[in-house]
Length: 390
Image (tube, rainbow, N blue to C red):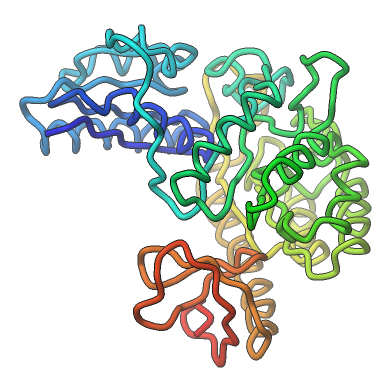
């Protein structure tokens, strides 16, 4: 058995897991759980994954890394299934795994390559423990990013996704403090053969003017953004210690859609944040339709240890579950309307291994049998079934 890496949580973890696989390419009988701690549910899923991995691999050396390995270090370290913990900040360092030499070449495990261009976070949102798990914000240099892109393109990736904990803060710690737009432009300029560039979750207040202009001038930058929105009510946003208000998000989406009318918007929203009343919840619900959020990630609030939000007046769990359900229902309705509007329109679709693919706007599309994984094909869907364009 060669090393197995189980990845939980964000796209950054997914990108890092690919590097860990390369580091451990020559290791045998090792299982790594790359954990997540963004919510209490994420920690529960981490523990569940550890137990499942041990049952499937009773004789393997089982190691845990990731945010939960930092934030829940004592609890995870005492689990009988766990043989050791690898510090989150060290998990891409070969020395942390006691292996010699340079990592093996990164293999492309997906039709798109996730490249971690930034790590850590300098902000202090009252609900979040991730800065404790990831540390201060730090950026990969342009040269290092280009090197990573080249490695993935050589192995057949058709799409590159730039990701990070707070990816729009990329460059703040580099000479001249360049913006994310300059990095995106450097990638597309260096690799004219790169068909698609996509960005992971963005903090709207940090999106630089160059990046906004690129949505109009560079068609290889996908018409799809995912906003770290979190809520639609201004008082809750203030209590979250977010740096934007509702109107800021509305203006940003209006500006971007003026540049790229077909832009698809995704967003993270938290249901049942402490002190949230029904009026605030309805503001959260209504922003889904106002922004036409078609890729919505709803997180029921759960208190994280030693965060300011955990000390605020809490909403009861039954109400949180109900409100999360209402947010998801609203998002599903908006998404279904959007998908129905794509029927009969020609879409450029990147083929996955499961017989489906994603259009430029990240709509999922069923592909003709035999479509080769990694190819970009034109599809004119004729119907919509169970959330899939056919």
